[in-house]
Image 1: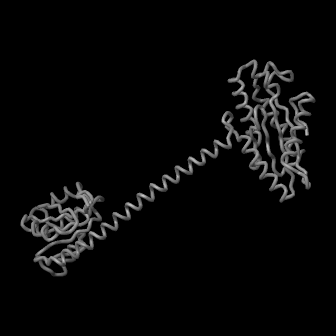
Image 2: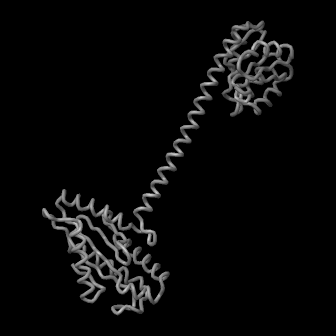
Image 3: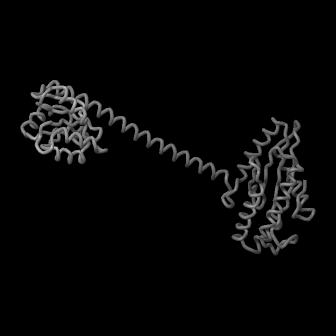
Length: 326
């Protein structure tokens, strides 16, 4: 293990010979020994290193061990570093309790017994190692959570891209097929009706040919947003079916009720007053809409449901456009 990977121990004593003795007793242990000869120097080193343990002499000039420990405990960075007092002063309980009150976790009394010293240091090195392993595992877990969150976000974006029309931003044909299939299954189970509106922009080819494709794209976007805003119920679903054609799925809705919603779609679009000089039914962009209601029987299908709405749409166009047929 490199010195940068080893755990650090700070030993503090105003007598350098005492520091050398402590260092010699710990030199065979797998750790870095950092020495300080005063409380001030010790406090300064605490900001330069992460220490697994501090062996702190009690009797030092200017700032004794008790004061040094109290200052260490008062700082957020050094508050939880374990401190063992090394002392030759009285073993009276009152003196020992004073040390614990200042933040010591243990005492070593001079003359130091090597086995006791090494045993206690080993305990705190092992605790620090477990703490470091826990922190590493926590960081790894946080990294994995971030990676998983990003993966979920990316998958959500991809899913949205696969079910969203790239031009208008509304659900696309794939999303329409999925929702219609689910709606029909639910309707069959509940025995409740479901309706479908197919809508087509009137004379859109003439619009595109005369105003250009950029204006045509803008027209599609505004029509799509208008339809979406007209469909207000939570279960209703509007999508771009393809080209200038849109579809609205209406669960638990009869054809009569769907016709009212379709007429609202026409009126809401009319309020936009999207200019269309090349339409033979209005000076503004209009829609023709066809409505069908599902009637369950042994031979019902999603295709026939769509086909019936398309037939109604064709009838609306044949009868003059800018209207609803069902």
